[in-house]
Amino acid sequence: MNTTAMTRTASTLTIVGALLPVTFAVAVLLPPAGHPDTWAYPTAPWLFAVLSVLLAVAHLLVLAGFVAVARTTTGAARVFAWVGALGTLLVAAAEVWSAFIATEPAAGSAAETLSYLYTASSLLIIVGSIGAGVALLRTWRDAGFALLVSGAYLLLIATPVLIIADAVTRTIVLTIWGLIYVWLGLALRRSTRHP
Image (cartoon, rainbow, N blue to C red):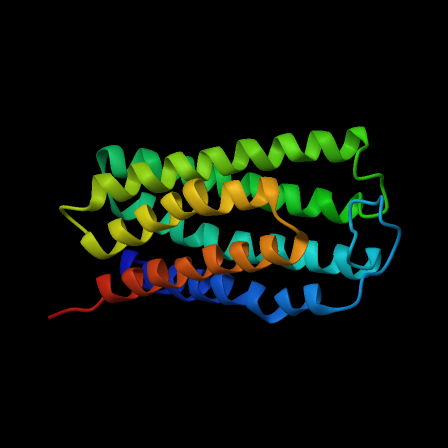
């Protein structure tokens, strides 16, 4: 597959991955289900597991955007894009793990360890996104701004909300963060257009 075709495919995958969580973010509007002390609460454990796997798929689709940026750039932008890709891969793994511990205690060791994985993956995404974004601002402004905004949003808005807010607010804030990747997908698509 040539670079243009690969970038177009990555563009589509990134946009689908960014939009996918919107379709099931409505789950937080359902009445609480399950035991309040479990990892899945306030979502029913079976639904939580399904949604976690779908979120993992969404992250893997967005991963295509990071890989496309890494494969079509050089220098610092490439390195930082790979850092963001690693973080995205790790957050996908965390989502799968989250599905498996849906009925575990929210204050248990499995949930605590998973929280560390979410933290590490988020830090990698933040560093990768902001680093690649800054590195690309002069040469690929559209993708640079998309990555910079995504990383800054995760750092300055999503992270504090994840620490202090309820499940509904966290879901809304993370869904908005995911939607920022539509911008990256569109930047990838525009980069394949020939004058």
